[in-house]
Length: 99
Image 1 (cartoon, rainbow, N blue to C red):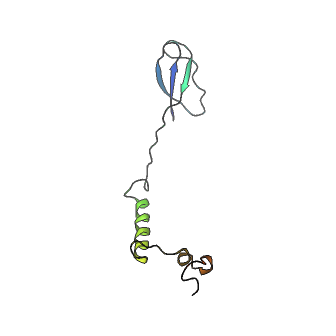
Image 2: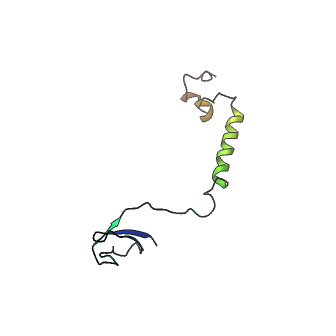
Image 3: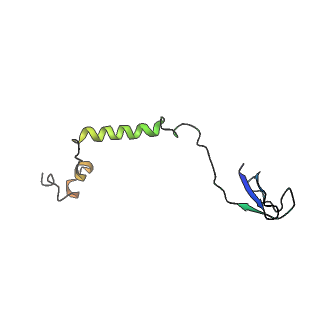
């Protein structure tokens, strides 16, 4: 359940309340019974399970991709777009377009 923050307009007390999303907002302060307003605060959340950490699968994909691209092209050079797509017609200015 979410935690909501409120501030009393009378006693200036700030407090947190755990409420369901469907619950209506509080109207009065639990200390002085003054009017309260809901505050907008930073939300926090926790990503649980596999795939959210650097040691999980997300990092392994980028390692494989960088290895394959570094093996196929010499250092400092990249493959032309027509070589990657397999279509020489898409790259008229490419030196291999006439082949």
